[in-house]
Image (cartoon, rainbow, N blue to C red):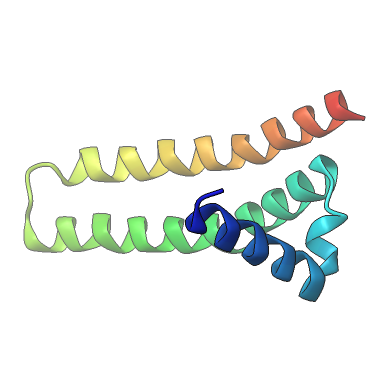
Length: 94
């Protein structure tokens, strides 16, 4: 067995030993954590940054400012829809 494979196996074993909650993680809990992180932290941050960018485009007189605002609105809509998709997949897994 190659040395890199042995190191990989020992590393994964050590991670599972020191963090047992990873070993007991299920698809459902992983999707639940992903959905809450997406809807609670990531999406609002991206929406605020996008709105700031679109506002800065309007202030500087960028001719594509309306497009930037439309992209932000579409992006937020898709992001909010992603939470629903994750909930749908969670229902299928159960």
